Length: 344
Ligand code: GTP
Ligand code: MG
Image (cartoon, rainbow, N blue to C red; front, side, top):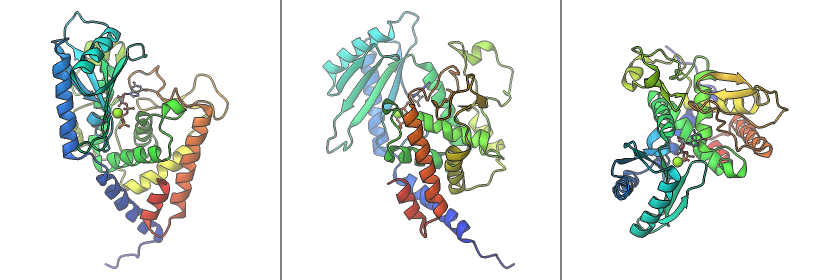
């Protein structure tokens, strides 16, 4: 049978998908980097056990959720399995002193932060051209759970979900709109925007809502709750990969184009809250246009992940979504040119 010739749009989208995959593939962490990070984790765990013998040091954040880029920071969480333990701020001070004595890391303990952490860093060296940046927190079990949730989402459809998320992480960094300290959104926030889009906006959805799927067996309140928050989600990845067949067949480029369009034009920032568990939620108080955006944590549902986003920050972020949308709508001759412009 004769095949219809591809339109210029089809050609662009196909080429862009390929470019996105190639682009992201070069930015993944190397096996060497992962090995160094694992060595660092083990070393720190061994040292911390001299203070708290019953402790485990676990990775969370991007090193553990499937959305890691080369040279990303290390997020570590110390879990102590004994009943009697020191407070997080005492631990931060003690662990900070210990690591300053026993290692070559530059140590900055922050015992009084909302979440007390020890910050460690190694400056760049020939063997580690980007150095290492690492945060150690204590007993932050919710962060371990949201890491596991994101990991499951990453694994259901890695070709589309991981490519999209990793590209957006690079994009928001290059466009300088990913620092909560300066009034924009954290990378965690952008990941949630992508998942929300793939679960709740796309029709048919690309991803199932893992927090609303029916469990395979009855589960008790104790199993599902942590610190008063419902942390349950469907986490049998093998079963999901076998059973979840999305009817959505869009390519990663089509999804990205639509993502930018949605967040620049269609999302009702003035009235809506993004929640990956519940979908679109109306804000309780209707705030004026361009008021602070609201993004709920998947578990800590009273917590606004976008709390640092200022009015100007949101204005800039939306401006960037619009800019990206415009570049993709003009469809330059070569997809690679579009990609370069996006990340300029
Ligand atoms: P990169 O470090 O940029 O690669 O991404 P990341 O996913 O590691 O993000 P980041 O280092 O900013 O945060 C690490 C982890 O901390 C996230 O994956 C979450 O588990 C947790 N986290 C960060 N910000 C928040 C927040 O606002 N609320 C909650 N509940 N957890 C957060
Ligand atoms: Mg991180």
